[in-house]
Length: 203
Image 1: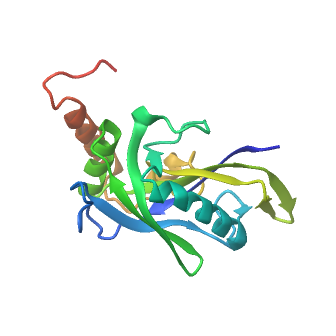
Image 2 (image 1 turned 120 degrees about the vertical axis):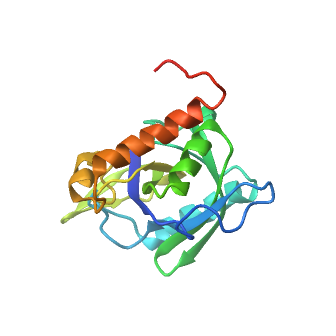
């Protein structure tokens, strides 16, 4: 039976800060690894390169049509919610077994938050979202041929790639000298963005 499959890994943007190069609309661009084939990921799942190549080839239609959109944080849905869109993938290619991408950060409310996180050196994760079924193969759960890639989203970075629910583990394993200050900084950035027009929403 098909289910939503979410795989997360730390996104290391090139350059480390937000901007080197901008899109034709003047929006900032970031580049990094989006997925890796032929390895056991943090969820114990395995994607063959043939499967990823097939889905990347199909997904290129969305890239060419300028609608390879993604959200900030994962919904439990197969639908991309336009009000939460933060970015658009502009280019995809292979580097050995890594799927690489150039991503445009959009000037939407979610995109502004994502841009501020990058600009302030806050680590984030990039996460594929797809639909498919799994088959137990020894210690691995192999993703089956019915897999369909939906999009890539940006999420808070887990300590273990592919393990979205282990944010507490990230705090324990983080190299940041003071994690509490780091989260206060994130909250401050988000509040500044949401309250930029002089009024703040009620949370």
